[in-house]
Image (tube, rainbow, N blue to C red; front, side, top):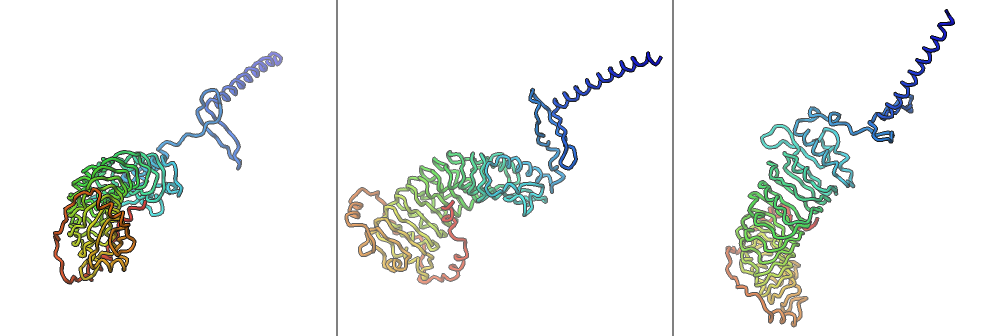
Length: 451
């Protein structure tokens, strides 16, 4: 009986061995298909990697990025607004192609409003809202590079300020009119796409600060620039390639600081500028191709501290109204085609007794022929520059032949304006006004001439 059972046991053993071999082959194939690898860890542990294999390579596939369920949840943030801002920031972070200062390394975690993380981002509660939100972005000087800021700035619904001076952002200015709190835009000195004036900027009706200088915008500036911003304080469009006439409605804007310098504007300075007499504090027309007569209306800018129309093709005499510029400190009309006498009343603005504050009067590279009595002393004091004119006995003047050639050539006829639209007191107490003027922030427009 035992002999008969032995063959049965051998047959059963062979059957079991075949099943075990088949199972082993199937398991190996399954592991290859799923990319399962098992190895010993350095500390005696076992490391397992799982990935879905494809094709016939059978090699190891790295783990995919964890789904969003593994990241921070809304409950990890101070409020829902900041969670949504976090998602926008992280999406934008993936588009940054250059970050020489390592700024984006701080854009991690859930503490968006912290002083030690998320450099460039600042939180504040929006009007009539109790919870904090991402209110401003200040990337000035970060030198970040990205193909565009579209889908970032315009995707932050609580944003009020976006400052991005001196970065390498490309693309176009985003459409920001849907941002109800937005009022300051600075995209100066970037690599924005070369195009006409970004008209979408005009939709920021709450704007107080608009800065698009040092880019490659070209063509005419729309009239909307001076009527779309009812509470604007500063407009800087200098150092672009704008051309054509300056819109005739310039004087309708309440702007305090206006920089149009270093473009290719042509035509006259709009006479409407006189309507800005109570609001315009600094204006730069410097280095364009403006022509026509020096406008009488500039003398109506009663609060202006800086007026710079140097390096243009303006002509005519200095209107008598300029004697009313009692607040002006910097007046530059150099490198034009002006002629006649430098008015004595204008030079008197450099004397305290007149109530004036004139510190620098630059009239070089013109064709003036005489000076008012008070002007001579200003040359010695370094407050008046009349080099390269046609003034007898003044230092460093043009040659007789050069002056004669100008006066015998064709000139635009400009009427001589002798009307003085202001009262000149004999003695003006300037002490208090000088103190307040000294405390006022100096020359924002001249600062805008630097990137």
